[in-house]
Length: 252
Image (tube, rainbow, N blue to C red; front, side, top):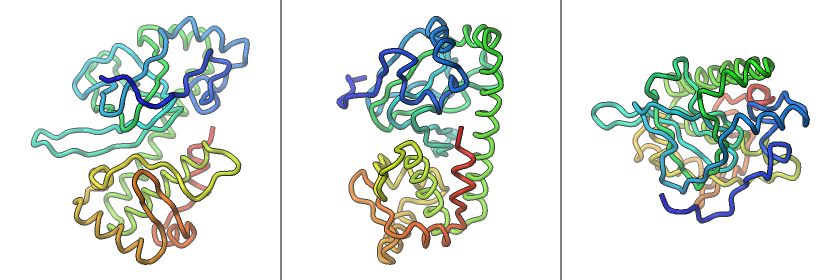
């Protein structure tokens, strides 16, 4: 892939990592986290449009996303795509029940990204050295399962208007939480209407029509690669979106 065009957030060492409190390493002290550097193989940068790994590929590495957005999806035999999640910085990628089996999904770079790379054969040695990381991994797995249940409910039972509003709200608050104090009602959103459609089981035409109606109601605006929520509370009421529950679910 081409060299990333943006300046990516790559820490000089694990102690200065900006996603440390969101990532697998969160339970470790400054002294302990230095040990983790002996288990990792380095950092990697990929450009937008590249694949971190592909469906049915045996992955030899696991990754912590340091910067950028990654789309996780499954492809059906007839070419249809189901987007499972949009991974944000701090996500741990590539872990699955059987690490020797082919990946059940693809990880596609929506933007230029940077990842911290862990050879998979080192993972259980790391867990034995720091059992608290195994507990952290269990928490991450449970959190991701809870979000997957919410996504299933969104796709299976909500109307198109509710689905679109719910997805955009979830991404908005996930990004806002990482931005910290001083965050505005505008976030970067590197998604196309096709991405939204494939995440929600809708057609791009239906997504376009739904976004148009939400704009007309002055609830949101998507311009280029940015999303602005003009009335988050009203949008949450439409979607049946519980802001506190989502923030609690993704909190460390």
